[in-house]
Length: 409
Image (tube, rainbow, N blue to C red; front, side, top):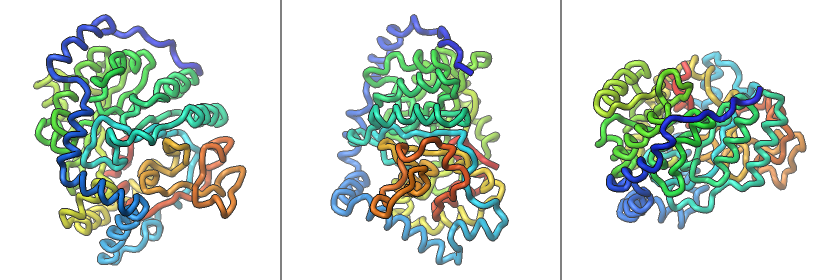
């Protein structure tokens, strides 16, 4: 059915007051601060230098080899052999219900745990109107099976195709999730973002790795926590996270080191207490996410000499129930350039679905480029295909499980 008409939201008349109040607090753009930190941070400088000299593909291969060496030392077989030995249902696709789209890697932050390696320097990797329009066609061609459009980045709200995709999906009665870093609310051009999101009934999933300023800023950059709290207050003001409004505001936690997240229920109590009593902030649900041993977090593990320790932790906490519930069974992930993947993590490791999965087939010459949104008529074409897995997948099956929607078991 059609989406409800955009609702009138509380707080719209306060917009100019909010912006005026934000400026004295120094809550302008975070980009200059982020760029300064990147210029002086030795880890970022080293990573940038290696990327320029060796290339992303070589770094990704090296990262995979480190994980493989760690698992070999523990006599652990490949991930798919490991799960098969434990009686997990074969790793094949179910009908797609969630279309997750990374519409660009540009971000006003550069977080230490970011598996996408977003930053203000990623200006070129941005989705085109042609690719966004093709996604809308796929929504129309998938016979109502797509229930959710999950938009991520970078800071997705800063991309040109964000609002057109939101409006198109809502017009088709499809739920929209905005994966928001919160600080984006204070970037130039985003003055009306809370009202836009609320008016279209978008679900907001916001990153807040800790309820303490010290831990959050350590992971996400100086000044991020204070801006995040100010943004949560603004989202509350237009009804997000407030019971009875129908506007969901979920917070996402990820560990600040090489350990698994605690139980969602216990951590939720601590977040509600700290954020509610200290800042008057309300939210709908807390979601926990395991740090995947890839990209910036993999670099951290290597520097600290903890790659084997962390892989051992993931393997020893393997949970068959979590493996049954992995998000890739009914989610399709699309990159900014229109390539199609089983999940966002495979996307960042450049593991696209093969072109042969498309109705138009593939040829050997172009097979390595991977499947794109232009190679399939409908996402229904992908049902029953084999999931691409590797040793990073232990991250989604440890403990209570991990997915973009939180625990899976």
